[in-house]
Structures are given as C-alpha cells and as structure tokens.
Image (cartoon, rainbow, N blue to C red; front, side, top):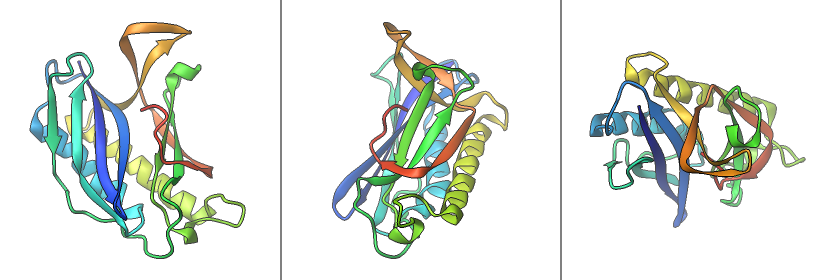
Length: 197
C-alpha cells in the first residue's frame, strides 16, 4: 500500500493558497507514478477549483511518500485553471469548511479542510454558507471523492485519508492513515488552514 501527503498549490491576489490531503492506494505497493499524481491533480481542478473565487489560480500538486519522504512527484496537470465564481471576494482566510468522516470515532480519525477563497454572495448575513451554495459545494466534494476512488480502476482501493501522528494520546513513530468515507460541508464558515489532512 502506498501512503502519500498531497499538497495542492495555488495563488489568490498574490497570496499562496495550499490545501493538504492524505492519499492511500492498495493497488500500488511502491511509489506512485506521475500519471497517478496527474490524475489526483486533475480531480482537484475538475471538481474543486471551479467553485473557488475567480481570483484563484491553480499551480499544481506535490505528492510526498509518508514512509519515505525522499520519494515524491510534482504534477502541473490543470495548472493555470482559475476559479469560476465571480463577485466580491471574502478575505482569503475565510473558507468553506469540510469535515472528513472515516467511520471511526475519536479525534485521531477525523479531519477538516478549509477551501477558499470564496465569494460573498455564497454566504448569509449570519456568516454561514447559503443553503444553495452549501448544496453546490457538497456536490463538488462528493464528485471529488468519487474521482479519487476512480483512479485505481473504479475500485475502493484508492481513497483520501486522514493522517494522524497521535492516536489515543500516543505519538506514533509511523503516522496512522484512515480512509475517508465521506466529506460533509459545514454550514458554518471556517478557516482555509487545513487542520489535518
């Protein structure tokens, strides 16, 4: 099984924007190849980037092996893609909050990612996502997860994963990876800083 940390890189109004996810693939016993990382990058640009504000420009993805950090790949598949949501943009630290579910209880088995920048028209006066915008984001998250799973021939062998270095208050010498089963878009806005992939 291959375990990777994938970082998606972009810019918005001169500011660097990064998002981090874990990735596991049972079909790949050794290092991922560049084609696989290109597919991960394409899944991001096809499903997530179009919902971002138009000031966002995608630059590429980096995948680094969790078990051997000297192994990694760069991908520029989809580089230059821009967000398609037009209008007044919220401050770049404000983001759509996605909660990752693994089916297991406990802090070590939950993840959260902030996606942004986003436009003001997608929010309510209560600093929350408009219900229609939330549904649209949820559709994108579901499609992104499906696209990732499809990388290994449409099986469940490839998935996003939560990566935990501390489990039950114990620091593990090797990080624990737990497959993500679903991503839920929170009605509340959050920070675009990824708490944990």
